[in-house]
Image (tube, rainbow, N blue to C red; front, side, top):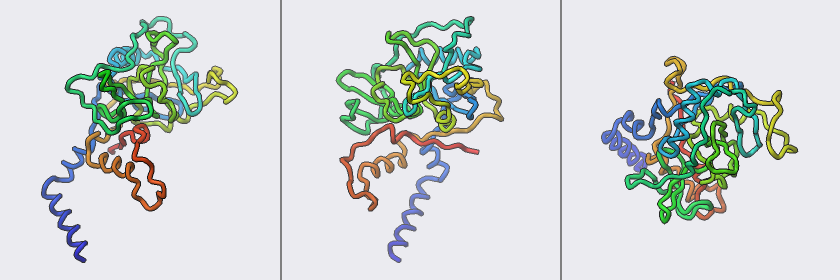
Length: 284
């Protein structure tokens, strides 16, 4: 009985400190409209949040091509199970577009006022990992560099061997084990809505190492639009957890300790920040 009274007192006290609406505002953020792109595939709608803070030139070129209708009617033409789904103009049908090679934006110099939130030291592929503007990110303090991790849902530009050869084709990560691409590819966004549609795209046979698909096998990209060009009635109110919210902290602390009696091996306390990407929700 005493425990119940104590719990009730705590709940009352917390309610006097902040209202439910204030708590929600601290827990969730609404992405900027200018940073959102809607992609309608034959399998469903996908919404991408762009990362101009990391790859401003890639974001700018992608948005320009989107606004010009470049991606409408194209395909996911290279899809490797557990790896990536790559889309774009593999057949070279879009001749009249101004598509220039982009200088690589694999990482950025960490600004003095960086919002990088450190969560772990000595990650497998990075000296430090955490969150940056709501994206799972890595940091090298000695080199003063920050970058986005290659997590499921990451959107990056495809390229050839030359690092400055990316133009218009992009890929979405559909597997977990792609961290070797960190700081080797220009990541410019992430899927925040519609990953089931991305995961539904037709994959190449396991006997096709390149992942290339014949034209009749490919999943279609019906259209891509800037969020500002989508009618208000058709927009989806997607929100993302704040990286420094109480619930995120509690989730990570629980993952480090594994105190649930189900776990007999408690691990070493290290985290895979790709597994702990910030959650999203849709408001009706």
